[in-house]
Length: 296
Image (cartoon, rainbow, N blue to C red; front, side, top):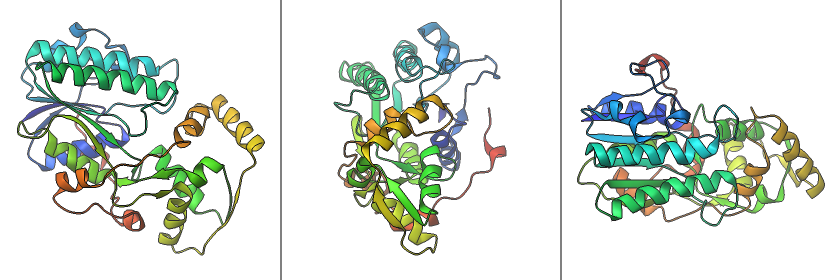
């Protein structure tokens, strides 16, 4: 199939690109340097997308940002641009659309969650109306080399002593390997694959503190000393993170971590045809991708 992949140079997108190529698909990745050029955060109208959809059999959107910035505003990246893309797909007759969203956004007041929800709802409405065969994928925490949150967890796992915010100690997550998410996406481009909302979680639910401890154990280190970070210091740390846009820790991150991020693991198992990798083996299934394999 000819597949338009948005976000091919991002953390999740790189792995999806590799999985699609391994499955024999031809991947087209729009970019600011391409011909025709496309800046995702500014492609807010149907007309911006139509030139890129000619000859395509399916579209995958794996674009996402953790921080709201002037260069990449969440309202555009997570909401306006995807909605324009979905409308363009309906107009161009490209029915199969796979959209990578995030688990745990329902009822969450953050801009991240609200902007994600808006695009999800639009694709699901177009699918329900019979205009598209859309899939909204909501994975739990995605782990792998190159992911900002994954690198943060790895840095924490190497520390012999930790002060963790209480939400990090209490909130449940269900981490899944980025390569297995990519494999699931590659299978979902098939016209015979299911449509609608699909939640994806890894093999086991555990607290973030327990996940960090598991990563530390996989690194061969002894158990770390862990204590709760006082609420005042937690607030100060996220306010500091709000002023440093290059780090993943900020007020929005804390709000997202304050609620559980878990689901039934059978959906991922059904797409893979096997059990997902458990958290205590994730370091063994995160091969680095060769950057030269990504074609723009």
